Image: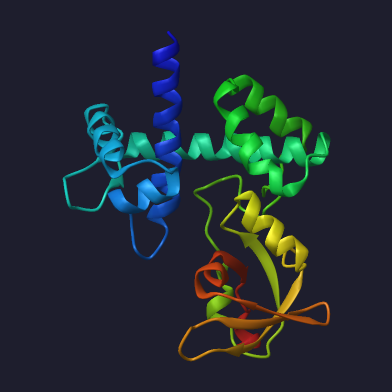
Length: 223
């Protein structure tokens, strides 16, 4: 039973990771999954074979990995559980934002469908997790990366794609959290880093980090 539970949790983690990476420009690869999940490429290959046999993914070696309809449905269920767990932890239990993701990873696998429904109702059916990401993973994304934002045009941070404790802590120390008004002051031509201003202070963000901070898209009349 313990082995089956562990496998089930591993499958769910892979489904979440594949769904998340599928929305990135580079797509889903064995290497990307290994980096995100902190495992070896060989471990990823073995798990992908199992998931393909389970009908959760479409997978051929050296090709992009994609979720089947069943896999996509299961992934979105897990993402909903995870983000509701984060809301429960931060809004009710007062867990610091930088700890919410890791704690939610431990909790989400234990939630029954009925408990998920009760948590959502108790929290008032929130639309977003505390990092600003939508509870409903199928929702449209009205955001763009901070790295692509027009210069000297204030924007509101909508969500943080990267939820690891180190990154959230780093951004929080610089007031770069959902709801903050931020302005890109300079985009370096070679290193592609961006210099941003928030609350009267300037900070330099590397290109990879700046791409994970998402701001609300401008309305047509603002472009």
